[in-house]
Image 1 (tube, rainbow, N blue to C red):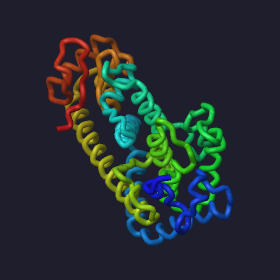
Image 2 (spheres, rainbow, N blue to C red):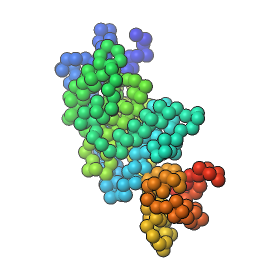
Image 3 (tube, rainbow, N blue to C red):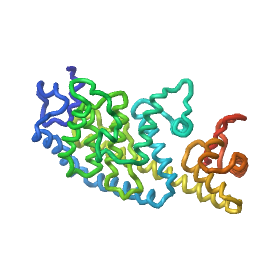
Image 4 (cartoon, rainbow, N blue to C red):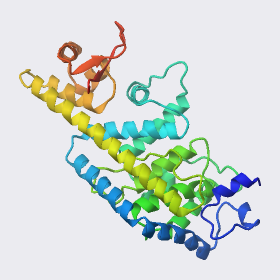
Length: 330
């Protein structure tokens, strides 16, 4: 094994021995518990920044708890797209929205990448989390790749994670994320699956507004074997991602307040329903709005034109057909 691979053995106590490096995960319960100890130490050292980012996560949870459902949907979609970039697949939120709503993909786009980003979006939007069973959460049932079947590799990860129950949820999520490759769970979507799983684990203590914690993972401390360095990078990434999410919600709230004020005198239910759809999705077409609002095509088109004329939305394609609109948050 080459020297560069030593960086992947961050969780082993002390200098790794040659025999140990051959196994994906130690099987001895005592060793599994020992892997958590450096993270307990790191948690103590970084208690202050951890408390600050936990407070920010709580504020995001509270805000989403009181927000329209569409805000949570939009944030999940945006986060899924961001995490796809971390996984090297670079799916933009607008393209993901088109894939999810209409199953549209460009000729040059990787349908598998869009499908994986769609999986991430669904897992960030709701449903049981990884704590209810990792294999069901991942939705992976293919035969094992390598020496161990998939179920045994998932069991290895869960066995070590069971010793980390005493960690703060944000720290436990970071531990699980960095543990992922050593459990042999890697396949084409490995990095995305690890990140989505960690995002859900990080929100276990939330009250239901935020069912995941936004993540920013450029590096995420992967260049260091030290738990403190990894956790410090993780906390900073959480801080940055939560601030970005709060700014997005600020912009969305300002737009909705302005839109509701301008449309208050319009008659019928279509304007209000259309505003909700536009807040939920980055791009909206007339057929999509017709389906989601239950209004007629004529009513949808008339309201889209009115909203465009009054500076609340903009048409983004510049075409006469197959047009899409987006809210104008400038």
